[in-house]
Image 1 (cartoon, rainbow, N blue to C red):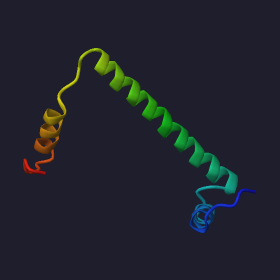
Image 2 (cartoon, helix red, strand yellow):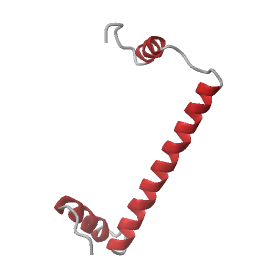
Image 3 (cartoon, rainbow, N blue to C red):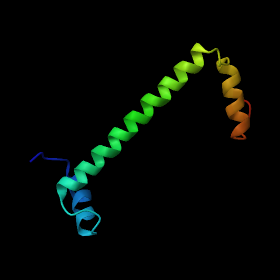
Length: 78
């Protein structure tokens, strides 16, 4: 059995005690599925971004930051 940091072992035990999972293996399997999904979503996002670049759907960085500042209602100098 792999030894994890104490806080992670405690979290696993809490998940089992709460009834969310039957055993340690099911907690770890669920966590790995979430990690796998996160990675797959990141790859999809990167591919979409690269497709945008290839298609010329880009804007200067200063414009992108200005759009974000406007959207988040931040002052111009932030």
